[in-house]
Amino acid sequence: DGFVHYATGTCVFNSTKADDIEYIQSYYFNKRKIIWFDSRVGKFVGYTEYGVSNAKAWNEGPEVIQRRNEKERYCVHNVGNDYNHAVAKS
Image (cartoon, rainbow, N blue to C red):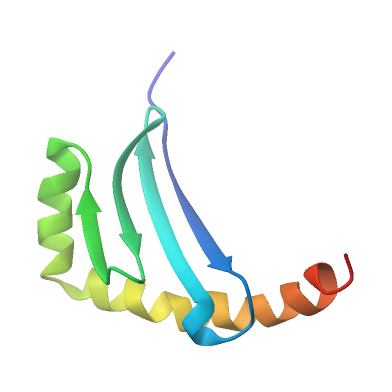
């Protein structure tokens, strides 16, 4: 009985080339997606009234710059390891 809020960060890739890597961060409230950031879109998109208002604020602030850098910092760095250790050996 209560509320659940969580976020996921996902790297989608089909090679180790930076252009083939996509970073997605999604925010959920009670199992409902409220807002997400997609590196290919380059901005936050809201799915609910609350998400839309947050997306507008985050797209005008430092949050959007931070998320744009996550692809390089998190995905590009880790995808090479994942690809070499898991995908290439399967």
